[in-house]
Amino acid sequence: MKVEDHIMFTAVHGDWKVGEKLTEMEDKKIAHFLARLSNTVSSRVPAYLGEVMDVEGIVKLAGEFEGKDLSDAIVLLKSPGTSRKLGQFVYEDDKKLKKLLLDVAKALLVREVLSSELQIAYPEGILTELKVEPAFEEEHVNFTAKHGRWIAVRRLLIDEKTPMADIARLLAAINESLTLKLPAYAAINISAIEKYFASFKKVKKADIPKVVEAYLEFPAEEYVPSEFVEHARIYALRKCLDKIGLPLDFPAKSLEKYLEKK
Image 1: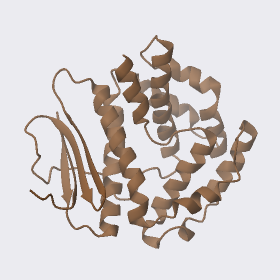
Image 2: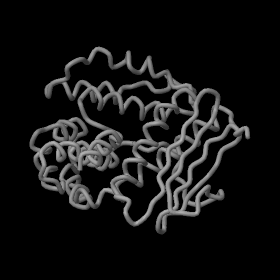
Image 3: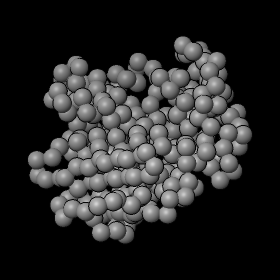
């Protein structure tokens, strides 16, 4: 049976019941839908990290950054002292496993700190209702997409034995797929954004304010149609932080490696 071109996401777990399906496969509509899905899964990841780290403690740690200049806050986020503080909130003694969880904890802290200063979510909001019949009766998270050569299936059926961190891993992996695909549909010139930051190679502590300044001066409207200016600005932020060595998105690979080795 031929599968129609579509993008669909459903999540049914406890009181979280959301889902929508897109079948009007115009580039702009796809871009807006992917943005909303990215917001949805990213915002939900912290809810599934409580078994491996003190999420509330990390959120409180973010409060220590209030009132700081953006450059100073990012310098502090990158500092070894902040990494040591984060280590206190991770529930793991094995050094290698702890490092993997620290990658995730750092992403959580970065998002908490920057969200009070910058727009880190796309302007489309999140899914709040279950508007489509799920493909499974069981509790689950399910993402499928088919459009041209893009075929994706990421799903997890959830039962009492499912580690909550595995749900976080899947949500993070779905977000990675979405953020990779969104630029093509929104006509964001990713290669030009990379060139904009290309002069920053091995960024040291003293260079961080220069990278942040470049981000703040980023002329997003020159890199994308006007409808997606805020989306381009988020991609510039992602590249800015990448140059500095900080994550904007939760790293699915770190969670995957942790779960494999644990």
